Amino acid sequence: LALLGERILAILKSTEKDSLSLFVAFSMKWSLTLGALFLAVGVAFFSGAALLWYIDPETAGFSEWALVGTTFFLLSGGIGSGILLLVRKALFGEEEALFLLGKSFRQGALLSLFAMSLLVFFQRGWLVWWGAVFLFLPFLLIEIFFLRLSQSRTQKKTTSGGISRLNP
View 1 (tube, helix red, strand yellow):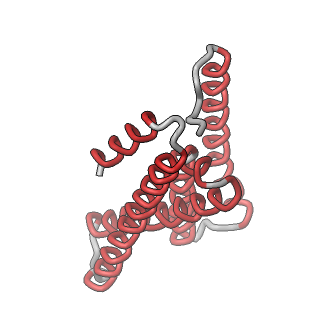
View 2 (cartoon, one colour; view 1 turned 180 degrees about the horizontal axis):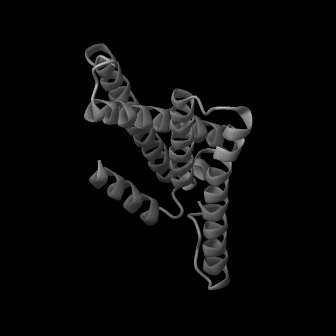
Protein backbone atom coordinates (compact mmCIF):
# COMPACT_ATOMS: atom_id res chain seq x y z
CA LEU A 1 0.00 0.00 0.00
CA ALA A 2 2.87 2.36 0.79
CA LEU A 3 4.54 1.55 -2.54
CA LEU A 4 1.30 2.29 -4.36
CA GLY A 5 1.06 5.61 -2.51
CA GLU A 6 4.61 6.48 -3.56
CA ARG A 7 3.75 5.57 -7.14
CA ILE A 8 0.73 7.85 -7.06
CA LEU A 9 2.85 10.70 -5.72
CA ALA A 10 5.34 10.11 -8.53
CA ILE A 11 2.48 10.31 -11.04
CA LEU A 12 1.25 13.52 -9.44
CA LYS A 13 4.69 15.10 -9.61
CA SER A 14 5.35 14.01 -13.18
CA THR A 15 2.03 15.18 -14.62
CA GLU A 16 2.01 18.93 -14.62
CA LYS A 17 -0.02 19.61 -17.77
CA ASP A 18 -1.87 16.35 -18.38
CA SER A 19 -5.16 16.91 -16.57
CA LEU A 20 -6.52 13.42 -17.36
CA SER A 21 -3.53 11.72 -15.72
CA LEU A 22 -3.84 14.09 -12.77
CA PHE A 23 -7.53 13.24 -12.44
CA VAL A 24 -6.75 9.50 -12.55
CA ALA A 25 -4.02 9.91 -9.94
CA PHE A 26 -6.30 11.86 -7.59
CA SER A 27 -9.07 9.30 -8.09
CA MET A 28 -6.64 6.48 -7.30
CA LYS A 29 -5.38 8.22 -4.18
CA TRP A 30 -8.94 9.01 -3.07
CA SER A 31 -10.12 5.43 -3.57
CA LEU A 32 -7.01 4.05 -1.81
CA THR A 33 -7.55 6.35 1.14
CA LEU A 34 -11.23 5.51 1.52
CA GLY A 35 -10.61 1.82 0.90
CA ALA A 36 -7.92 1.62 3.58
CA LEU A 37 -10.09 3.59 6.00
CA PHE A 38 -13.16 1.39 5.43
CA LEU A 39 -11.02 -1.74 5.74
CA ALA A 40 -9.58 -0.54 9.06
CA VAL A 41 -13.03 0.39 10.38
CA GLY A 42 -14.41 -2.98 9.28
CA VAL A 43 -11.62 -4.90 10.99
CA ALA A 44 -12.09 -2.83 14.17
CA PHE A 45 -15.86 -3.40 14.04
CA PHE A 46 -15.60 -7.18 13.68
CA SER A 47 -12.87 -7.47 16.30
CA GLY A 48 -14.96 -5.34 18.66
CA ALA A 49 -17.99 -7.56 18.04
CA ALA A 50 -15.87 -10.65 18.72
CA LEU A 51 -14.53 -9.11 21.92
CA LEU A 52 -18.04 -8.28 23.12
CA TRP A 53 -19.17 -11.80 22.28
CA TYR A 54 -16.33 -13.61 24.06
CA ILE A 55 -15.47 -11.35 27.01
CA ASP A 56 -17.52 -11.45 30.19
CA PRO A 57 -17.50 -7.92 31.71
CA GLU A 58 -17.80 -9.21 35.26
CA THR A 59 -14.71 -11.44 35.08
CA ALA A 60 -12.68 -9.34 32.62
CA GLY A 61 -9.21 -8.31 33.68
CA PHE A 62 -7.08 -5.36 32.66
CA SER A 63 -5.88 -6.92 29.40
CA GLU A 64 -9.43 -7.59 28.20
CA TRP A 65 -10.51 -4.04 29.00
CA ALA A 66 -7.40 -2.72 27.24
CA LEU A 67 -8.38 -4.69 24.13
CA VAL A 68 -11.93 -3.35 24.28
CA GLY A 69 -10.66 0.22 24.75
CA THR A 70 -8.18 -0.07 21.88
CA THR A 71 -10.83 -1.51 19.60
CA PHE A 72 -13.28 1.24 20.52
CA PHE A 73 -10.60 3.87 19.92
CA LEU A 74 -9.77 2.48 16.48
CA LEU A 75 -13.43 2.08 15.52
CA SER A 76 -14.58 5.52 16.66
CA GLY A 77 -11.42 7.19 15.33
CA GLY A 78 -11.90 5.56 11.93
CA ILE A 79 -15.57 6.51 11.77
CA GLY A 80 -14.81 10.08 12.88
CA SER A 81 -11.98 10.42 10.36
CA GLY A 82 -14.15 9.04 7.58
CA ILE A 83 -16.99 11.41 8.35
CA LEU A 84 -14.63 14.40 8.51
CA LEU A 85 -12.98 13.32 5.26
CA LEU A 86 -16.32 13.03 3.45
CA VAL A 87 -17.50 16.38 4.84
CA ARG A 88 -14.29 18.04 3.63
CA LYS A 89 -14.73 16.42 0.22
CA ALA A 90 -18.28 17.76 -0.02
CA LEU A 91 -17.31 21.25 1.15
CA PHE A 92 -13.91 21.79 -0.47
CA GLY A 93 -13.57 19.24 -3.23
CA GLU A 94 -11.45 16.15 -3.73
CA GLU A 95 -8.04 17.81 -3.99
CA GLU A 96 -8.43 19.91 -0.84
CA ALA A 97 -9.85 16.93 1.11
CA LEU A 98 -6.79 14.86 0.18
CA PHE A 99 -4.52 17.76 1.08
CA LEU A 100 -6.17 17.96 4.53
CA LEU A 101 -6.12 14.20 5.09
CA GLY A 102 -3.78 14.40 8.09
CA LYS A 103 -6.05 16.93 9.80
CA SER A 104 -9.02 14.61 9.32
CA PHE A 105 -7.17 11.71 10.93
CA ARG A 106 -5.89 13.85 13.80
CA GLN A 107 -9.34 15.30 14.50
CA GLY A 108 -10.89 11.83 14.30
CA ALA A 109 -8.36 10.54 16.84
CA LEU A 110 -9.02 13.48 19.17
CA LEU A 111 -12.78 12.94 18.91
CA SER A 112 -12.22 9.26 19.67
CA LEU A 113 -10.16 10.08 22.77
CA PHE A 114 -12.88 12.51 23.86
CA ALA A 115 -15.57 9.82 23.44
CA MET A 116 -13.47 7.31 25.39
CA SER A 117 -12.95 9.86 28.16
CA LEU A 118 -16.69 10.49 28.31
CA LEU A 119 -17.31 6.76 28.64
CA VAL A 120 -14.80 6.48 31.50
CA PHE A 121 -16.43 9.44 33.24
CA PHE A 122 -19.85 7.86 32.73
CA GLN A 123 -18.68 4.51 34.11
CA ARG A 124 -17.27 6.15 37.24
CA GLY A 125 -20.40 8.29 37.76
CA TRP A 126 -18.54 11.56 37.25
CA LEU A 127 -20.27 12.64 34.04
CA VAL A 128 -22.23 15.86 34.33
CA TRP A 129 -22.73 18.45 31.61
CA TRP A 130 -20.12 20.88 32.92
CA GLY A 131 -17.64 18.03 33.39
CA ALA A 132 -18.05 17.17 29.72
CA VAL A 133 -17.41 20.81 28.78
CA PHE A 134 -14.26 20.91 30.92
CA LEU A 135 -13.18 17.61 29.41
CA PHE A 136 -13.67 19.01 25.90
CA LEU A 137 -11.50 22.10 26.52
CA PRO A 138 -8.09 20.32 26.48
CA PHE A 139 -8.97 18.60 23.20
CA LEU A 140 -10.04 21.94 21.75
CA LEU A 141 -6.81 23.60 22.89
CA ILE A 142 -4.72 20.77 21.41
CA GLU A 143 -6.51 21.15 18.06
CA ILE A 144 -6.07 24.94 18.10
CA PHE A 145 -2.36 24.44 18.79
CA PHE A 146 -1.98 22.08 15.82
CA LEU A 147 -3.99 24.38 13.53
CA ARG A 148 -1.81 27.37 14.49
CA LEU A 149 1.33 25.28 13.99
CA SER A 150 0.27 24.18 10.50
CA GLN A 151 -0.80 27.74 9.66
CA SER A 152 2.62 29.11 10.65
CA ARG A 153 4.38 26.38 8.63
CA THR A 154 2.25 27.21 5.58
CA GLN A 155 3.06 30.91 5.93
CA LYS A 156 6.80 30.14 6.17
CA LYS A 157 6.63 28.01 3.03
CA THR A 158 4.77 30.64 1.02
CA THR A 159 7.01 33.50 2.16
CA SER A 160 10.18 31.54 1.40
CA GLY A 161 9.00 30.82 -2.12
CA GLY A 162 8.12 27.15 -1.58
CA ILE A 163 5.00 25.58 -2.97
CA SER A 164 2.59 24.57 -0.24
CA ARG A 165 0.45 22.22 -2.39
CA LEU A 166 0.12 20.78 -5.85
CA ASN A 167 -1.71 23.01 -8.28
CA PRO A 168 -3.11 21.34 -11.42
